Image (cartoon, rainbow, N blue to C red; front, side):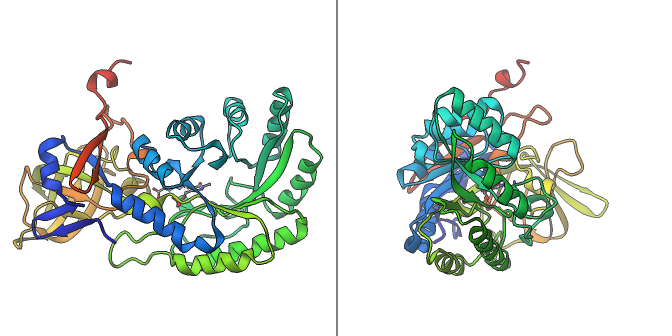
Length: 409
Ligand code: LLP
């Protein structure tokens, strides 16, 4: 189901025309479809219904409180990587027994909070971290549930910057380190080893890396002979950013996981981010100027790389579509750029685009995941507003940061 569509009257988010929203909210702003978000989560849940996983939405992909609350209402837990994300998940009403905490560099303050909140699992990534968790737990007279993050040395065949499962990466513990650490953990008094976790990267569209990941996990479990209560398979399921791109076949993945789970009585945890929220968000922006130079038509937008980092950071191509439909065409070298003072502040090159003029609006698609959450104040630009649409209603779910607040330090 597609709740964000280009219809005869232009781009619509559910029943609302995006153009109408530009009359109400100042551009640039992110806009989400609640129906799309819910649909994605429920579909994910349904595909994996036979294994009844705990779904811990990856808060780093989008940490808007309203959005987290909506996900909580339909059963989501949270995967967090900082005390800030942990506090937000709790504020959104997510039960602590549905929260997992990953990351290679958790601070003492973060570990303290996670222990006190009695979250489901702290997924540890080094021996030093376990020693610290054990020490703090002892001080607090607690026995803390932990998971161990395994690095299976598997490439996700994805962008280098979002690949985490290769042996040269900082994440998790390699096979023999994992085996050794598990033995040590079992002798510690204030931690209990309940989980085994793995996450090999993000935006993985090929099923093979997941297949390899599961068989490597099987080998490790066989060697360890530990009956893990939880097996956390992380996130990473890839989506298609345009009609031409393939996405991960979730059905096939679920069949692999079902096979993997035969003869095991552990509970599966998933930490999906992008597949839940990626296509539920758009970024609406206004054309400030059109400038012709060096045989190019620069379309200068009011959204910059600080608002949407993915193109500059990963060369990501987010489709840009006009809010109003028209048959008249622009041809030539068209480049969409932002106002930030960096030459990497460019979004997309096109050979053909509908005829647009200064003051018109466009929309970036598939920016619900790692759009707003990666944004920054670079060039002293305020973080922008977020709007949520449901049916024929819309509401502001994050105010644009005030200039006053921005310039105070
Ligand atoms: N679990 C762990 C331990 C992770 O590190 C991540 C993402 C996820 C789950 C969620 O992955 P997802 O299902 O969303 O692929 N900023 C990059 C993506 C970085 C992903 C970092 N870790 C981007 O914009 O593509």
